[in-house]
Length: 134
Image (spheres, rainbow, N blue to C red):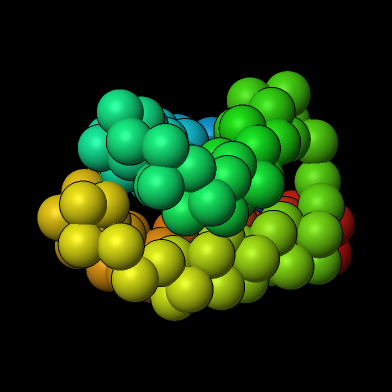
């Protein structure tokens, strides 16, 4: 028969064993959101590709697209950088907010929702990492 304290230890070990897979699950969700954002930005940039007058708008999207790629690299390589990640998501949001060209607006129409979902998933990931450490 298992004593109550031994049972608590075993339950705690089970919970700890589940955290890394939960963390991987959240990381996978983050990568899915980033892939979707990458597609949105590619479509928005492609919509601005054919006209010389749209070049300045296209150039405004480039830094945000690079940030998406950097975030993908962080989460693909199992690196941690929640503060840096949050700052980069804010930069991406700022780029989307600054975009007024109607040619790219269609491609970016869902981006605000994707960014909100990404922020939520990143918060879950940070929480899981904190629990993993404790």
